[in-house]
Structures are given as C-alpha cells and as structure tokens.
Image (cartoon, rainbow, N blue to C red):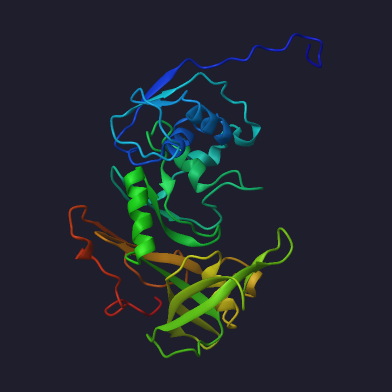
Amino acid sequence: MSANGLPPSPVVRTAVQTFTVTAEEAGQKLLQYLARRLGGDVPPTALQRFIRTGQVRVDGRRCKPFSRLAMGQLVRVPPYAPGQTPAVARPALPPQETAPLDILYEDAALLVVVKPSGLPVHPGSGHPTALTTILHARHPDAPFAPTPAHRLDRDTTGILLVAKSYRMLRSIHEAMESGEMCKDYLAWVCGHWELGEINEWVTLRDLLAKEGEPGHERMCCGEAGKEAVSKVRLLHSTGEASLVEVRLETGRTHQIRAQLGCRGYPVIGDPKYGGGVPPLFLHAWRIVLPGAAFSCPPPWSAPWAVVRPRRAVREPDQEATSFSCPEGTGQPDDPA
C-alpha cells in the first residue's frame, strides 16, 4: 500500500523500440546515442546495464557502449519505465523558451547564434531558461538535438556555434583542438593599456585555478592550475578605458576576464574581477574555422560602440585552407 492507503500505481513500461540511426546522429558512441535519443528518461547506469546484458542490440547483434554507430543501423531498445529519474525531469517550458533568437547563419548542419547578455548556454541553479532549452523547444523533433559546440559566459555576448548533427559537432571540436579555429573577442577594459602599442599582439600565458567559497568562486592566476594562453592587442584608448581584441588559444573558464583582471585591466562591467557594475563589455565578435567565417558587431551604444561587419560565409566544399585566422590588417579598428 502507498502512503495514502491506496494500492501503488502500476509501473508503465514502453514497448520494445527500434530506432534507425539518421545521418545527423551517425558517428556517436552507442551510449551517447541512447542518452540523446531517450531524452534522459533512462539513467546512464541503466543504459549501461541494458547494453552489457545484451538487451540493446545493433542490427540484431550485441554491441559495446562505446562502439560508434553508422547511418542506417537499427538500434533495438528494451522496454523501460520512462520518467523514473527525478534528476532529469524537466518542468514545463516557460514562455521565454519560445523567444526569438538572433540567427546569424543556418543550414542543415550548422546554426550560428548571436547570444545576448544574461542568457546562459546551459541551465543551472536559478537559471532554468538557457540557450539549450530554447533550442530544444524550437526543434523538438530534431533527430539530433541542436548542441552548442562551445560556451560563452552568461553575461558575455556574441557568436556561438550550434551543431545540428553529430558530424558537425565533431568537426568543430577537432578544429578547436587542432588550432584551426580562431575565436576573437572585443573588450573594453579599465585603464590605459600599457602592455603593447596599438595593433601590437601581446601573448598572455598563465596558470589558472579556481579559488573561493561555493557560489563565489573565481579563477586566479598563480603557480598551479591549467595553462591559459591568449593574444591581446590594443585597438583604441581613451586614457581611462581601452578597447582590446583578444584571440583565445585555450578555452579555460573565465579565461579572458581572469587574465586581464590579474594584470590590472579588468573588463568593464565585471564585478567578479574588479571591473565594476554590469553590463559586461565583452563580446565574441568573430569565429573563423576551415571553410567558414562569421562576424557580428557588439551591441554597445556610444561612447562604447565599435564598428564591425555582420557577415556569414560558409563554403562546405572548400579546402581546409580556404580560410585562415586573420591578423587584423585592414579591419576597422576604431570605435564608431
């Protein structure tokens, strides 16, 4: 009997299901594929048990959790009781999750979003609405849920690449790991930049480690931690503030904010690293990767406005050398 004296409700299980791997899903590991396809209804430990005991079959045969799937393969899933994992249960989507996004570019495999300030990429404590929840609400029947290929801090604005297929997601990650992808940011920082002349690239190299109490953590430069490397050049200075361009060579948490802040040049509007009250003047303005280039100006008003082109170029059939990381020559470097 249940706590209210009534008989317990019977457990409702699904029927045996067979899924056909689509072109967008091909290349994923079996465990990864099932987690995405079943939408979190089954915990990873149960998925692994299904695979280990042979209840999950691929083309009628047993398969290992990390075997990669090919387009057209048939994946048999045994009966299971959906919704039995509270950790992955989702509330009803709030109205904001149907809000329009600023789409810079879209095709069958790639979506390029200009993220606004205040919108986290992934949901978290106190922030149930995120870019991922909006994307899933907009594409509820997508064979491969649109997946951000990298991250931006919640208050950072700018370009973010979203993969609409697993092949595209892997392609972007491989370009990031090989150094073929360039991510350029614009930032207004406090003070007059004295680490280099105008248009002179300066390399910042630090070890970053997380410090502070839970909820108040920040990344600090020190003698231990993960290596963080970026290049910075001065574009304009007013004496009290400087406009800099930053090119990331690694992708650590809060990297730009921490590296600039520990040198006495915090990003304006960044209270965590000494830059004062928001809004945060940090914008991901350009991404270049093999066969594609995207750029978008920051949403800043005078006197902080900066002229940059809004442009999207994608050539899927081009060689990997068709685009390369620009050195900045010929770009409009002065604020509007």
